[in-house]
Length: 423
Image (cartoon, rainbow, N blue to C red; front, side, top):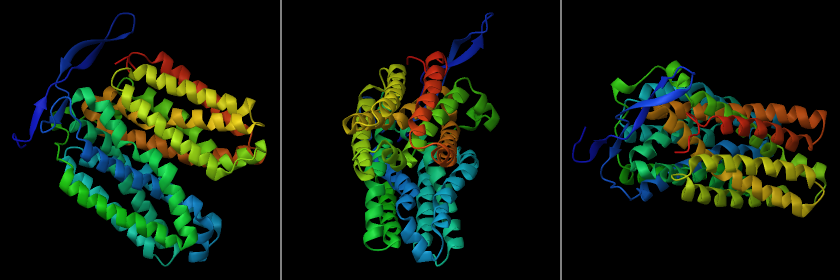
């Protein structure tokens, strides 16, 4: 470890004991994490965090972009659109299967080399997809891209926190996570337009060029940070059993399943509601509103994390109610989209902050579980949404949104000690 650039900063982390009435109580403090001392208290490593956000933008755009290019991909590879849709599934499957093993294997390594390996591995896999002549090679490349994406996502939260002073950790996560709503609001629509106007390979090619730029910026701007010390590592099963981690994962799954089911089938809802709002307009309003949500999160997350996440969940629940009650009013539907976007915009940093705080030095492993929960929810949303819209109609989607969010709200509200504490 280089003593000129890093120092061990001891922050209070509570170990726990169980009282006679079964309530888990804090008892002692211990060294919590390593912080890069090149960034003093009161200052954010803004440029480094923006590089991480750019990589997040690339990852979310790459994951969702094929959904808007299915006819073009199908025609280019001479396959059915249903087969082309498996490009999304293969990517998510790579993330689900390999994220946790990859994070477990690399958690003791220095952060910058792992970050660069993740970026370069993703670059190679995505570039193979650009030039792939057949569906088998393309699906294999997408699976590999999803695996490297999972590695980057799994380590990003812990990396951002380790190069930031503890009192600004939540804000750092918010900045590093801004790429997600930007990818959904700008990246995916732009990729769809580019692929429709020219060729679907152009969309993937531009992603590769952006990834090269990100790799150069990461190499020159992002500071290094130590990996997790051997003495603080615990087995995967024990990380899952850390008080609060399992609860947060359940909230994540319920919340993200509610979101992704509606997001994936928003066209079906708008058609059922029979309102004169196009999918493009709805998603643009959602994306802009999500940016507002992440700005609010950045301002409040380090001061009032529990009220913030409860407020986001209640706002999300309200959006579902408005989607149902105002389904025949264009104005009401747009209001619901705005509430939906604001509530969802800060979800990723809020949940990453909660699970990082709950897991302490094992934040990288816990965040890899978070990424898996996200992607399992994406898988489940595609299947569940298809069943709902074929059995009922698009109005079933906001009802599901209300039910799942109510479950998430009730769990988060009661988990005030270990999962979603006041601070």
